[in-house]
Length: 376
Image (cartoon, rainbow, N blue to C red; front, side, top):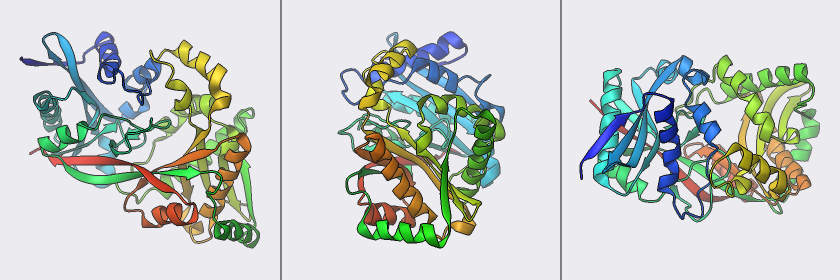
């Protein structure tokens, strides 16, 4: 049957684009429905500050009048300025198990990116590495944690058969809170705290002035600590200002920890309760349904995602990272958390991968992949 590709051109089309995700996960017990309002906000080019410096075009694939796939072609200008290349991206990819449909989607994304001067395409990124990134390639037996991606296994073949090559693996580690810290780590972090006069503070959501100051500190550490990482792009002032209102709704202030060495800021760690344990029951992705499930089930959340941990260059050899990891685990246990996920970590980050496996008894239980292809 003929495949028709249509551009998303207005709000009504965008709503179809967002809602179409449900079509590809019927009867999948591990699918966590996103909130419709969040997805519409993420793709809103008038509100999301990502689009102040970048652009995208969304497409829907139809066959016999039915939606059979979708894709977003993304030109991230800040990425290209940072890395001095002409990379294009694809994201929000969903597709039936049909190579012809997938090829049609990648073709239209490629043509749009070529028209914007790009010479390669990488993905999936929804819409950037500062959001959700990577295709799940291993670990399909459990739902994703908060702000991590999930997809059917056959997407791997659809992408590879088009000609994409593997660009970078992203790792996710499962942590058991009962034995996450080895005896060596316990002793080491106690010594480090005393030697470097390390003190810890956390966010205070009630003190707006102090909250703003701490968020600025976190922004500076985030942009500095990951500056040399593969594919990293600094978040802009507007993008950081856009985050707190959503973060405050789901964050536990005791799990946003700032580390100070002899009074100087050294690093921070951010952990989020895995609200996907609750949202998996919100089948329609409604805001009201999410609020109800969070209100009635949030105390049953047993998993924590350690989403960000960064240390400034001058303090990287002090062991502040070990203190932060230990503290996140201890605070999680105090909250009633029994397990955690540390994600994602670049596969090339040998120091972090080794620390998670050896010092924290982490199990590499999910792998994600970013793929890339030349398009000229």
